[in-house]
Image (cartoon, rainbow over all chains, first blue to last red):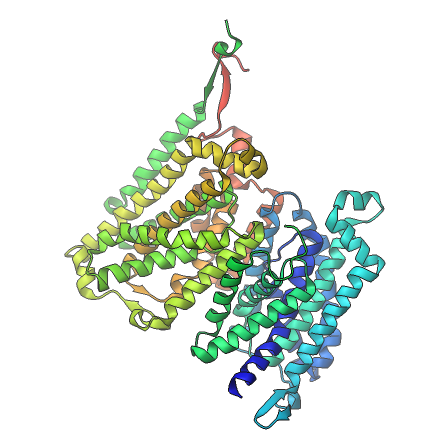
Length: 288
Length: 342
């Protein structure tokens, strides 16, 4: 029963990893941009929520109503005011600018909030669990996170394939020049993609802060999990990202059970093995 | 009479000959530190030298081979740990352990490359980072190497470098200066060779270079392994100076890759002079701003972002374009034999 428990926990953690990863996957799909600051933006959302929670005394889940729109706006402004100028045939500018941004965010958080470990108060949700059978219980909060991941991915899938905005995203992704000839403002489309990406990041950041403790230095680690989930799932596939997150989550928790203290390492090793065996991921979509 | 006879191809320019003297003066200035400076100055120069050498290697990868690695700390750490393993476990003389560390780093670089080369562009960058994390976490698991808290070089090993502390510091200093000069020289030599032409072709267009008969994969692999082995040597040297190693510090992204990236970007990526200028700027900034703690890194990050956006060719790129400076001429230029411009 211990092992079943570990696998279930791994699957549920995978939901959180999928939330880390969808934002990264989305902007790569639309504009071939890999945002090295992605993990630090997740942690920024956690701290933003923490500041509001401690200021207003609200529950973190209610504060989501503030954090998500704020991160959406930051995403739009960041893309419009900075990252749009880095896009082009050369991959170095976006990579190095987001790398610089990552260092700036990390140290700004360190300066404002110090290196202390923080946690968002989840209240009764922290310990609530559902008994499935004797000896097997599942936490309510991890279930909520997992369900949110499914809803977010289904929503993005709908947005991409059933709406006019989705067509614009796919058109700019396929051929930015022709998309512009058809009257699409690429700068605006890219900014909207980044805004949506950071809205998902906000959700992920708040859930992360409610689940575990966090500090300004953990951003790069979250970026790596997000990246691994994207690559395992296959570039450009949103549902693949969920599968990638689950595989990563299960590898970490089962690996940590087999070799105590080696949970992160187990996740990385499974990722590298999958990269060798299936370099294009489980459900590849995009060609790049 | 063939038309071509009126032309000749040359790489040297007047400024490149003048630049050679400036560089020689710089090397002499650094190499004579023990004559005019104390222990603190010598330490600073060694640090300057290994950052310069690391920057040359990263610039070779990112600026010429199109391999933007965010995982070079993997090889600094491997080199450092190789020094400890060879000198403590196998009883090798620490100075002999330095080249062995370079070999070890190269041996690790080959399988690493075969995995990360499956990823392109920015994903390659994060892939190298993951492998560096794997090395860091793996070394943290080895309890014979002190696990997560690390270990120190035993006194006996330290004493075997040289009898007195002053002599040991002199030895480390000499190797440090040599490695900076050698790293710069190797990059220069490589770029002037036919491999350099292949690298430049790859940087400009991968499909075009492949169609002209360049084996892109093999060229990139060679460069990656070469950079890894020199980075491993530098790593061993760094820990021969520090005496104490721990996984988090040895595989630190900030210390061994982020600083190096900022150095190269600020100095000028894709130019041999870039890392030199960048390292000088980096040390000047550090001298004035290091007390500011996390503000220092914020400022460094912002400067790099602004440089990348406003002057992607870096400080040296701006100077070179303004004054036609080429201290390390790798560009082949066409001249008329009678001296008039082509």
